[in-house]
Image (cartoon, rainbow, N blue to C red; front, side):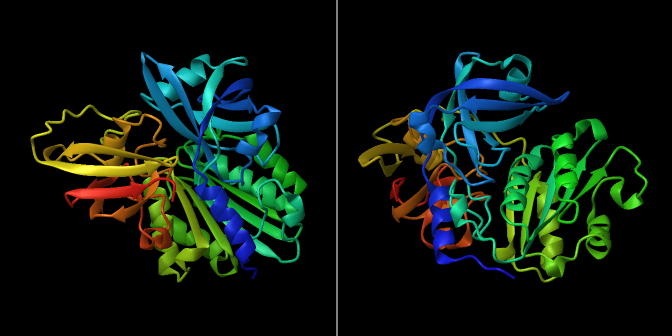
Length: 389
């Protein structure tokens, strides 16, 4: 089994925690993946290529104006690092303002604001330091396994492509769940990977609404089916690192079953596309809050790009630190506002708080005082956070 080196961990952490900044990028290609999904390629000009270097598994946020308001959405990069371009897949969501607009209207020549890559859904092994292939570990045999559902395939296929090409001693098993064959994104690319690496890459398509030859690959994945997959298809004791990406319920179920089988949490990397609480408002901009300076307020202090800011927040409003900061600094970094992506990460310097949800920070980050400001509210009269930390 191979382990991560300090150099690899440092490079990965640096890339994962690099605070994003937006730049206008031009759409160079739009490719239809399924009836409900497209792949969008953005051209990255030479002078910005250093800003858009990335590790497979990371994401970008897209920003534009729709129906008179700013809209931001995060999408995983679906290709291995290629200087000069960024590729994402956008699947249509029921009622999704941005995803439906993109699928119906986005075309080459359009310009969107694209945030520089971020995210920690990356391998802890020494795969690569961004786009430096000379740093790839080719000495050790590493076994990866992944569970993806729907558009959760986008970061996983980027990781699989990269590690399989980088090291001929890598093996990769993928379980990919969809409703039907017509919903499978990147179906040709996955078949190409299987043809190219027949002894090292295996993909197991599970279709919930179509009957396949194997009952194990038909129907919705539940705990019984998951245990059967682990008994008959995947050898959990051989896997060095797991990647889980999809809806909350599936990711949590796989994590729970792996834990029951004694797989340590540090071997499991996961990313959510939803939190499982669709009724929660996750707006693209901060909600309006009226402040009475003579009322009972929290005082929220923050540091961003070397500049200090201060904003009062009514205690009765129960607004997040991010929401309050956005009222005085619209450039405060955020993407999903749902506790999933980690873009709004900051370190609490002083004060006490409560963080409602966390699907992005590692336990060691929380121990060092980092929070997701979109999910964090003060519990002391004054709190100070540092976005630059």
